[in-house]
Length: 279
Image 1 (cartoon, rainbow, N blue to C red):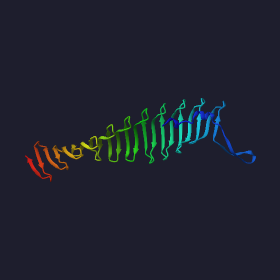
Image 2: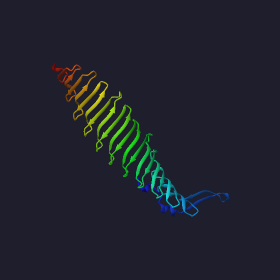
Image 3: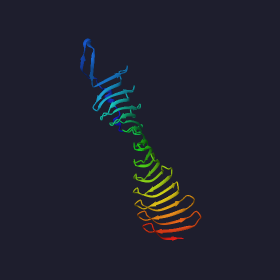
Image 4: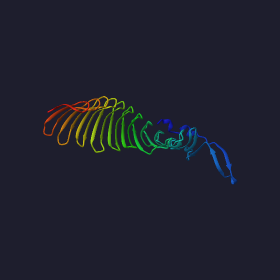
């Protein structure tokens, strides 16, 4: 957030004049209404300590310390959002609580250079998220609750997603992204608890998969279209198969070893009919 969002300028705070107009006086000289564009409460030295002012963007209240530095403000932003700001002894904004135009609450923490370093907010749908920023104000990590479940998002210095770990309705998942933000790998547990690792190319197409199904481990290889072309599988009780597929993902050849150790090869046509087998 830019620094100019923060403070009622000190010069205006110190120099603010009280302009009285439109007094309505009832019987006995009691003032029923006081109209002004500014109001100051001063200490015993005459220094302003509380200032209520109408600025071009809206009303604001400022609390001033003994050194005439603003330490706290409550004001309305140009978009009508109410905002509470806290300042250090040097008058630099270090914390802010405001409602965004859609009504979502946001708490922001700033470093000594007034750069946003941490933020806690609720989405319009009420889903919470905590975000962490680097010294340049770029997001590097977010922990939040989405409609699908809780997740952690990690981003690089340029703001691209590089890793996501989430708990989705069908189970936990972890995504890895390259420097362009393209997904290159996924690790997840299926609903039956089977672990699966999938590898993707630079276009996001699946090219390899390794999993442990209830029947045993399996490795799948895919072509550039994401079509399965090869499979290596270990079945319960020991059989091992290598299966080759054509571009239509039809099995055309298989090499297997039985639990007893005997090996066999089977080649099939496009209709799945054997054309050569051994033994």
